[in-house]
Length: 327
Image (cartoon, rainbow, N blue to C red; front, side):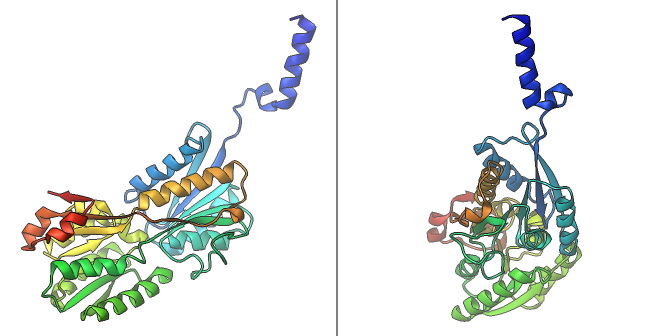
């Protein structure tokens, strides 16, 4: 190639890619990841989210950057955290958890939002319809609100002589708490059980919750879906074991840490799907054109060691349905 032709070619490349002329790397897209819980309780879910991004060719630190904002269970911090991401002009906000999704929606009508929620997105006002949500928002739902009564049925099956059960609710998560309480009271009535609704909105409330389960004579405790409780999965399992309370939650980690059983939607799949949708938005698709997805896989985990300690015999019918029996 002649020298003049080479100089002309280089000049064209520099004109198209001014970042090369300055020696700078191309600017990476930035995702704002907003959650009401803590990073310790969500490490597996964040990994699943990154896996979904990778399916679309996006790898954190290589061609995309993620700015994480955790409310650490203090949901009143979420509006400010969402506003911070808007101010930073991120390319997409991944609003994982119901409180985070509502805060993100209130913070911006222009920056694309991909949510992950256990609630009905129409009922809580995130979208007007599921097939074409419109505007700047789309996302993924999971079944943890719908399967909550099933946790009660499973506990009743394992503790058949119980006349009453308890449910743990976070009252600061109003969008979920009202629906969960209503659904569980109806389920308890159908099973002929009294139901005690117990509240916790900080870690210091937990000891009192388990003490109340025993004081009230409840046969077991159902833990509702909430980012706060997800962050405290291991602590809840430890307290259930210490107080000898049969308890049911939604994540495998709870049963693995000593809780009696876990039954719920596969949240890791929901986060993976949210990562996929984020990647599609980064590639130029409009969130309002992407139908709301639902993670439909439901999993059951049973801890046989905990059952033996509690003096509970797990029926063979329950063991046969379990995805994993932890021994």
